[in-house]
Length: 254
Image (cartoon, rainbow, N blue to C red; front, side, top):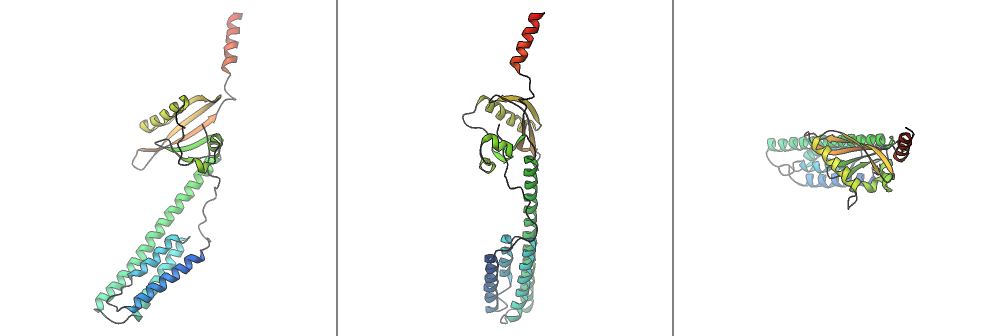
C-alpha cells in the first residue's frame, strides 16, 4: 500500500506579498475608463455603480487590504464623478444612485475580503495537514468514497513510486484488482457505510501491514472521505514458518 504527500509545506504568507505590476496597470486602466465614462454622462444617467468592477479586481490581488484600497479609490472616484459630471436628473434620484453605488462598492469589497480570508485559512489548514502527515513514518492518505487519492503523504508516495502531486486524483487501486486490493477496497466501503474506524492486518508483497481506516465526516453528518494510516510491521512480526517448525519440534520432543 503506497504513500505520498506534496513536498511544499510552507504556509502561505499573510502579508508582504508583492503585487504584480500588470495588476496595478489593469486597475489603473479600469479606474480611468470607468471615470471617463462616468463624467461623460449626465448625473441622471451615470450612477457610479460601474466602480464595482474596480473592486472586483481585488479577487486577483494577493492581500485583503488591497481590496479595501480599491474600494477607497472607487469611493473617491464616485464622489469626484458626481462633482464633475454634467448636471441632469432629479436631485434625490441622483443622490440615491450615488449612495447605492457606494453601498455596492463596500458590500462587494467585504464579500471578496471574506472569501479571500476563508481561502487563506483553508490553505493554511491544508498545509498544516500535509506537514502533520509527512511527519509520521506511517503511510498515510485521504481518499474519497470512490477510493481516489485526495491527500497523500511522502511514505505513501514512495510506496507507489510516484510523486505525491501525480497521485492526487488517481485511484488508490490498480485495475484489475488484486486480492489485497479487493479486500482493502471493501474495507473502504465498509468504513463509509458504518461510519466508524476499522483496523486490520494484512500482507502485501511479502510485507505485513497494520492499517487503520477512519471515516471523515462532512457537515451533513455523512462520510465524505476515508483517512488511511498503514504501518509496516514485518520486522516485528514473528516468522510463521519458524513458529511452525518450533511448534513441531516441541511436539516431537514431547
